[in-house]
Image 1 (cartoon, one colour):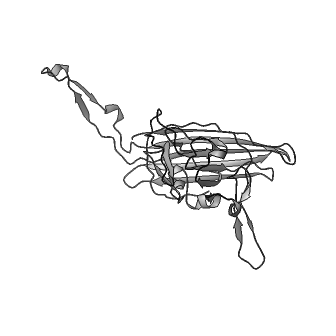
Image 2 (tube, rainbow, N blue to C red):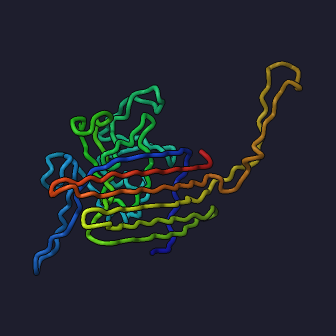
Image 3 (spheres, rainbow, N blue to C red):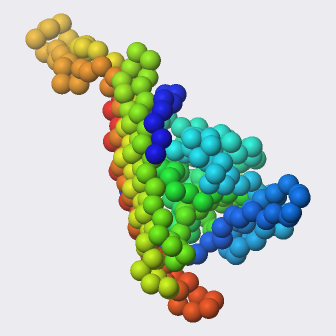
Length: 291
C-alpha cells in the first residue's frame, strides 16, 4: 500500500465501456548466473506466440509491468509518451489519436471519416474506434507492446502504421496473491483526487484460477466554471425577441474533474498439456466535467 503526492493530470470529456475476451500470453522473468549481473529476458507475444524480445523479427518496444509501476503509468497519455516510435493527440481522457512513423489516415475524428492508422488492443480485443483509442486504465498490466510498421496480417484493420498492445496479468494456479494501492493527491490551487486499485488471484483447483481487478480513480479539477450569460438576437430592432441564457446550474470551482471506475474478471482453465482457455470480461466508465 502506498500513500503519496503526484503531479496533476489533464482532463477532458468522454465515457467508455468495454468487453474483452483474451487468450494466454507469456510472462517476463529473470535469469541469473552465479557471480554475474542478472539479465532480464523479456517475453512478448507480438506474433501471437511467446518469444524472447530479442528474437522477434519486427520493430518492437516493450514496457514491462515493473517499469509501468516505476513510471506511475495509469492512463493512455502516461505510457504512450515513453514509446519512441509513437506520437499522439488528445483532447482529454476518453480517446486519443495515435500515429506511428508519421503515417496518418487523413481522418478528422469524425465517425464518417477513415479508420485510424494505428490499432490498439487490450490482449486480443481491439479497442480502437474511428474517434481513436479507448483510454483504458492501466493497472495490473504485464506489459505494453508497440509494434511499428504494417501489422495488418496479424492485427487486421487500423494497423497500417503499427499496433499497440496492452497485455494484462493473467490468472495463475501457482498460488493466492492480492494487492491494494491507495493514493491521495492535490493540485496546487485546485482540487483533491485519489486512486484506489486492487487485485486478487485465487486458485480454485490445480487447473482453474480466477483473477479479479478493480479501480476507482478521481482526477482533481483545476478549472473554475464561472457565471456568465449569452444573448441570442433575431437580428431585428425588437429587443423583446432576444433570448438570454446562463450557466447558473454549472457554476463550480475545479469543474474539470475526471471519475474513472472499472474492473476486470478473468478465468484460467487448463484444458490439457498444451491448451489453456482464459475468458475475460472488462468494463470501464469515465465521467468528466469540462472540455
